Length: 308
Image 1 (cartoon, one colour):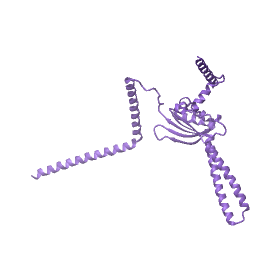
Image 2: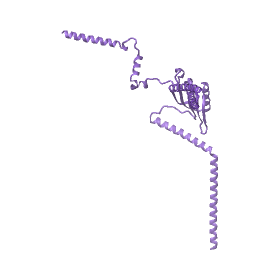
Image 3: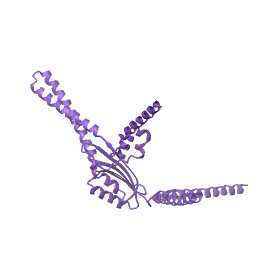
Image 4: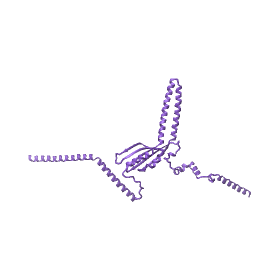
């Protein structure tokens, strides 16, 4: 009996110790927060469960003004626009670029076809990159927009450290050159100084290039003139809707194709007229030649009858 009592007491003591240990866990304490559980989940095996893909917010590539000063980001974007009023859209794009403190790095206009098209490489300050992407579709139909941000901090500071090393090396070589007396040493030091100066020049140019890319975002813009803006309706459901959509699309394509043929013929009317005149002249010559052949044959037949 005493053994049973001692056994029960031991079990109760173990249960008390277990509960006290659980009470010391973060979930039982008053200062526990939901963020603690999420931090633990994301730090241990989060990639296996897809937390980053499902719950992680999308990167804001237009938040250059909120980045720490030591972060070097290169922002780029590609934009496709279309407009019925090509001239107005082009002017609005130029006005937006100037308003945000940017400029055209390059521009190309193509007006050889029925509808005009233009291609621009726009540079705007990195802190206005988000504003440009948000407003570029105000004056034209925005067909596509892709943005990216590349962190080049590691490469930038590596180049910067190498530049500092080369400058220190140059100072030491110049100090040695001042104390050199042997011609052979002087020639070797001058050659090393020239190589170091070239390395400094290359590294300085590389850093300037990075500064340009980091300070100003690069956006490639394509502007296409259209007769009407592309419709972005939902896909038709059901056979009847699909058939009606196909008939409308076919009729539109036929009319557009017929217009293209007529315009193409109008653009080469002079050549077609020349071909028609040449063909008409050839037909007339053949007819005249045929008549002469018939008359000659008839005359030969009449002479043969008279001789008989």
